[in-house]
Length: 308
Image 1 (cartoon, rainbow, N blue to C red):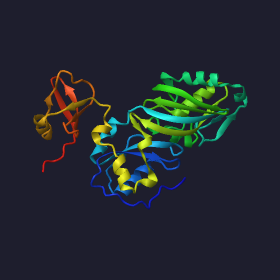
Image 2 (cartoon, rainbow, N blue to C red; image 1 turned 180 degrees about the horizontal axis):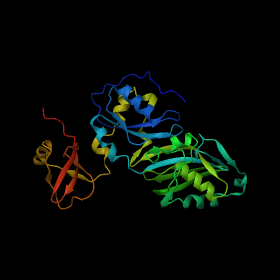
Image 3 (spheres, helix red, strand yellow; image 1 turned 180 degrees about the vertical axis):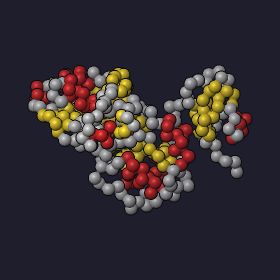
Image 4 (cartoon, rainbow, N blue to C red; image 1 turned 90 degrees about the horizontal axis):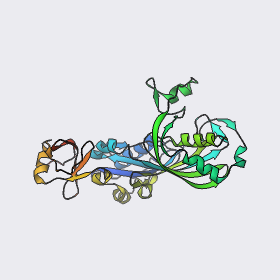
């Protein structure tokens, strides 16, 4: 596995408060990427919002400083991937890292229309069987731990949502497709199930995450560029922008004073209930994450800077 660069020119961390989009290469783990950010920015207040397998590349949203408290509001965002599956081979991990357990040449008789129809069967809210080698817990233990010991693993389907799936190219036995999905969806399980539907088997060969919510990998910083202060600063997403998917409520000066003491503020009639809210100043600073309760908005996490 390629080592994560460690000879990075450190970036002063005085400005660190936001969400840094990082473009993880194939090889390092997500933990390696977090460690590289921690070293480069010289701060321990770092946390990611969803892992990528070592063989996968693409977008990691890494929370910095006080914004680490926003991680729970980002982990559930829809994610978009570009994936390559290989038909005619199944593996015990459902991806290229596993051992091949079956081979079929029947893919030679498959056309693009059949592949597209099989992909379409994965669209919507579906019951998906997680891979045997996965981080799902059974009896309090990660499934991959039992699988590595050679023990039988009892798997139960999980309900997942695939918002869109699109065939990009067919170069049999390989097929490239794009998928946007909700949290908990295994792309390698999609490759496995499409192969089964086509009667030839299949597994995931490559995976790249291109988007998390509205945040794109196009503006992300590669790991080996974390020492470039200007690039890191330019790429860092302000806390309020990072949670742009949450309803925004602008708070006046009286409300800001109340928030400083952890008190609720009055709720306007159009403020939604039963979901997190981003409370903001007129200047565009994230003040708090809150929830409406009756006629008031109660802060859950306050981000106001201390008064000078």
